[in-house]
Amino acid sequence: DAKTTQPNSMESNEEEPVHLPCNHSTISGTDYIHWYRQLPSQGPEYVIHGLTSNVNNRMASLAIAEDRKSSTLILHRATLRDAAVYYCILSPGGGADGLTFGKGTHLIIQP
Amino acid sequence: DAGVIQSPRHEVTEMGQEVTLRCKPISGHDYLFWYRQTMMRGLELLIYFNNNVPIDDSGMPEDRFSAKMPNASFSTLKIQPSEPRDSAVYFCASSSWTGYDQPQHFGDGTRLSIL
Image (tube, rainbow over all chains, first blue to last red):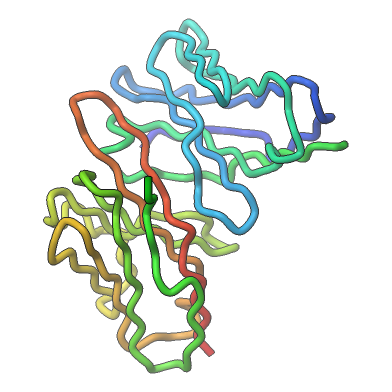
């Protein structure tokens, strides 16, 4: 499976934008880039996914590099409820394949 | 809409006992996944089903672990006999495939402690 590299932790202030990076230099042409997050004592929660183009939804935006070897999850205005572990995952068929979780990025939000 | 429902939420039992974890996927979803989370190994896939048929069980750690999906609305993960190293949080997830990549929806997990 193609691997992803994320910083272990990041810190941000409430109500400021947050950019969470992910490197995936061995991504294949059929891999989707998925982001999930896990709040304390909860199961993982889907955030966003994309293939080649940038994507926006109500939770976040996903910016994908032109060569697809990296991506950035953008939280436009972080709240305390966004404090979680964020996982960047590559999968050819995310919903139809088992997901391989790495260690993710522990996002800390300061009030 | 009801999400993925897992039971029990917490289970504490003694080594050697049989443990059964239960999962009800979201109605209409045709994929079901079992994951395990520990501090040491993180989140790892154990097994997944498509239309009630096991597709990939390569993540099941040992023969002590077994999973079944007798119908589209119910799955079990059984450990017999249980050991202290099986202590973990077990998550069930479901998804649907509609020709377009769909996300997985996770339950709140079962926290299992084997004494």
